[in-house]
Image 1 (cartoon, rainbow, N blue to C red):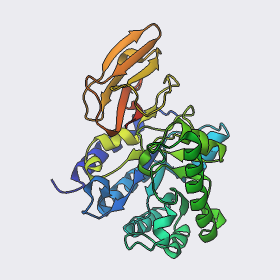
Image 2 (spheres, rainbow, N blue to C red):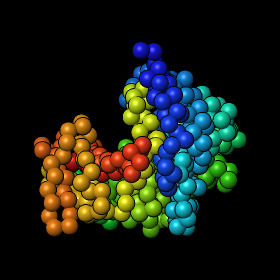
Image 3 (spheres, helix red, strand yellow):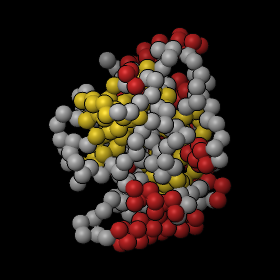
Length: 339
């Protein structure tokens, strides 16, 4: 099968069904890294496939917002219309140039999260400040990805106070460089966590500093999401060639039934708790490898748990249930980190 052929078939099928899809509030945030760079298949997407995705968004009457606009809507408690997409790109690799030209062609805004230290070191794989400024004219906003792209989770022996100071230093130093290089109209106090790693202390520190923040856990954005733990769907070629790409683009949020807890795992495997709601019997939850989670009911709470301990590092649970019309899926993802 030629690259992009699977998604082309899926796009055609969905176009035929698009008129029958029930409207509901939903915003889907996509995260990309590299384009047409076969050295890194886990984070790469071909430009031709990217063009097909943009064509699909346009054909299905999606409105594309910059990340900062979505954040403002959430901060103001304003409604999010259905069929809103946000296109984000982390790290600012040079391969973004081709994608930026496509986004300009479609007149879609996009949000680029950059770590300023590597840019100032003039690493050859990264865009420089002049190129990033030029992307403002192509519809880009340039946002904060920390100075050094270090994880904001706790280091061995690090106190909470020390970590708060480190997080603030990373964020403030990066913002200082962005403010000095990027026009005010193309920047905002929006952050993305390096590696998508965060916990409650990181959320609280960014909140106090006046930043919203995105992770890399999957799922559409819901009004009840923490503004410092907003979800995004990571996109690569393998996902783009799968019909699951369409499912994610059309996904709807869960209601506010999640019993929120810190993502750093202290009991492995961890439990995900959902309060009982009318569709709870239709919810199915899986680990990151697609294995179904075990389910137990305790009074008005359902607990979902993997059968085996999670591997060290980044993990997630994904939960879905079909929409009333059966055309779409509600999607919820929980990020876990095993030290």
